[in-house]
Image 1 (cartoon, helix red, strand yellow):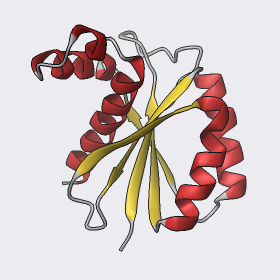
Image 2 (cartoon, rainbow, N blue to C red):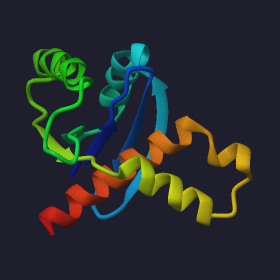
Image 3 (tube, rainbow, N blue to C red):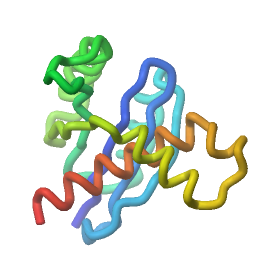
Amino acid sequence: MGKIIALDYGKKRTGIAATDDLKIIASGLQTVETSELFAFLEKYLSENNVEELIIGLPIDLKGINSEIEQDISAFIKRFESQFPHIPIHRVDERFTSKIASFYISKSGKSKKKRQDKGLIDKISATIILQDYLESKG
C-alpha cells in the first residue's frame, strides 16, 4: 500500500499533505519554497511509496482558472515526465485558504501563528487531500 500526497501549489510556497499508508487520514506534511518543490518531491518519492498526487485546481467563483494555473500546468508536465507511474488528480481548491485560516483561528494559536502563510498552505493542502479522500469514499 502507498500514500496519496496533495499540493496547494503557489508561486512562492507550496503546502504539502500526505495520507497514511492505509489512505485513511490526511495530515499536513510540510510547506516548501516552490523553487525547491522538485528536490523535495524527488527525495520524498524515493523514500515513500506514493500512489497518487492531488493538486488543487485554482478556479474562481465564476469557474475561471486563476493565473497560477499556467505555472501548475508546467509543473504537471514536468512531474509527469519524471514520475510517469504516479497519476495526478485535480481537486477544486476554492475557499481552502479561508477554511484553513478559520481552523487556525479556532485552534487558539497566537496571532503571529495564525498569520503564518506556510501554515495556511500546509493546512490548505490537507483540506484538498481530505476533500479528495471523501469524494472517493
